[in-house]
Length: 178
Image 1 (tube, one colour):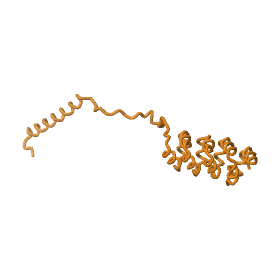
Image 2 (tube, rainbow, N blue to C red):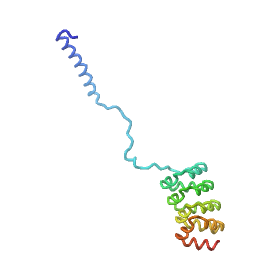
Image 3 (tube, rainbow, N blue to C red):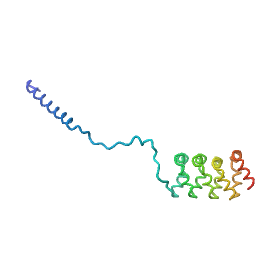
C-alpha cells in the first residue's frame, strides 16, 4: 500500500526508467540473431535422382518382387535394366502381376527377359505377356528361333488370340516353328 503521492511518483519513475533502459538497449543492438540459412525453395521442384543405379543380386531380387515396381520404373526406366541384368531377378520379374505396366516404362523389356531360355518360357506363360510382346516383338522372335518349345507355350497363353491379332508376323513365325 502506498502512503503518499511522492512515494507513488518515485515508484513510477523507477519503473519507467528501468523500462526505458531495456527498450533503448534493444534498439541499440539492432542486430537480429544469426539464423541458419533457409532451404532453397527454387530447387524444391527438382526431383532427386541417384547418380548411379545399384547393381547387386539381393537388391535386384527384392525390387523384382516389389508390387509397385511399375511406378518406380515410370520414374526411372534404368531400374528395370539393372534388375534384368540378373537371371534370378529376371525370373521373378516374369511372375510380376503388373508386367504390362512395367513394359510401358521400358520398351526393351522383352529382349532383356528373353535373354535366357527358362525366363522366356516363364514370360510366355504369363497372361501379361501380350503387352510385353506388343512393345518389343523382336525379343520374342529371337527367343522362338532359339527355343522351339517356346512357341507351344506361347500358343497356350490365354491372351494368344490378342497377340496374333495385334502382330500377324508373330502368327507366321509361330506357324513356322510349331
